[in-house]
Image (cartoon, rainbow, N blue to C red; front, side, top):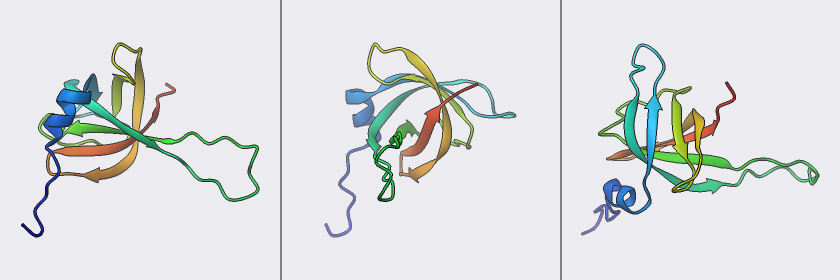
Length: 113
C-alpha cells in the first residue's frame, strides 16, 4: 500500500482528547460554532544565541474539524479550556499550521481584548 495515508481520522483524536470549544469567525460569518477541539503539543520557539534572559512563549496549536469549521480566518475567536475541566479562555487565530483532509490546525494566541 505505497502512498496510503495511515493516519487515524481526526474524529478518533476528538473522542480521546477533545474539549468543547466555541468558534466565532469575523463578520459576516460571525455566528458562533459549537465544536470539539484538540490541543496539539506546543512548539517551542527558539531564540538566537545570546538571549538567555528573554522568555519566549511556545506556539500553541489547536485542531478543529473541517466538518464544523470549514473556514478559519485569522483573528477568529476561539473559547476553549486547555484541559478537561479547566477554565475556558479566549484565544485568537494568529496563523495556520496546515489543513488536513478532515481538520485544520491553527496557531492561536491568548485574546487580549
